[in-house]
Amino acid sequence: MSTPMLITAAMVGAETTREQTPYLPITAEEIAEDAVKCREAGAAMVHLHVRTADGKPSQDAELFRAAIRAIRKRTDVLIQTSTGGAVGMDVDERCGALTLTGADRPDMATLTTGTVNFGEEVFWNPRPLVRDIAKRIRAIGLRPELECFDVGMIDEARYLAKEGLVEMPAHFDFVLGVPGTLQARPEVLDFMIASLPEGCTWTVAGVGRQQLAFVDEAAKRGGNARVGLEDNIYLSKGVLAKGNFELVAEAVRRARSHGREPATPEQARQLLRLG
Ligand code: KMH
Ligand code: ZN
Image 1 (cartoon, protein in one colour):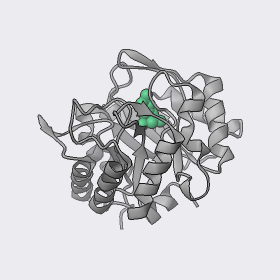
Image 2 (cartoon, protein in one colour):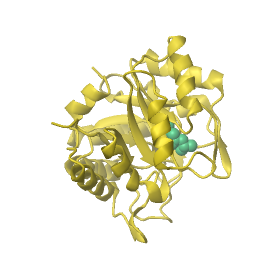
Image 3 (tube, helix red, strand yellow):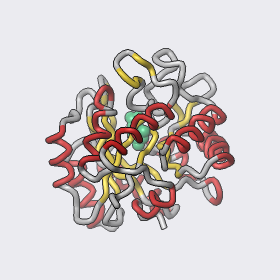
C-alpha cells in the first residue's frame, strides 16, 4: 500500500480578493461550508487565514475563533492557522490565533523561516521575529509547519532545531512560485527534498498556474500537496474554481492517478506527528 497523501486546502489567504473570484469564502459560515466540502472531497487539513466582514485580511483572534468553531461544528478536518498573515502586519497581529486555547486551539500553525520578496512587497521574517513566533507556537504546545519559500529557509530550520525551538523531524511546506521568489520547477522540488533534515515530511504548494501540476509532482515523489484559493483561483485555464473544494477534488483525482489515496485527518495526524 502506498503512503496516504495529505491534501491541504489553503482556503482564504490574505491576498486573493472577491474581485478576482466571487468564490472566495470570507465569513466563518462561508469558510465552514467550503471546509466541509473540502473534507468530503479528500482534504485532511485546512490552512486558515481570516478576513474582516468587508474582506480585508486579518489575524484577529476572535475571527479565528469564530471560523474554527464553525468548522469544528461540522467537520473533523485539521486546522492549521497562519502566522504569516499579510505583509506589513506586526508580530502580535500575526500571532492572533496562537492566543486561542482549549477547544478553540488550532491543530497546527505555520512558521516561515526567512524573508522574501512577495510580489511587489516584502514578506519580512527577520531571524529574531522567526524565533519569537517559534517560541509562541511551542508555548501553546503546537508543532509548526515550516513554510519555506527558498532552500535557505530549510537550512534556517536546522538552526532553529539546534536552538531547541523546533523539534525534528518536522513537517515542511515548500511554497514555490510567488512572484519575486523561487519558482515552481521539478528540479527545484528535488533540491528542496534533498535538502531536508533526516526523517522530515513535506508538502508542496505551487502558487498560481503551477498549483495543480505540482500535485502530480508531489504524488510521484511520495510527498503531499497544498491547493486552494490562497494560491490559485483557477481549476483550468480561464475557468474559476467554484470553491476550494473543486481544487481539492482535482488534487485527489491527480493523486489517485499516481496510486495515492488522500489521507484522512487521523492519518494526517500521524504523518504530521501531532500526537
Ligand atoms: N500571506 C503571506 C504574506 C502563512 O500563511 O504563514 C504569508 C503567508 C504565510 O500566507
Ligand atoms: Zn497562508
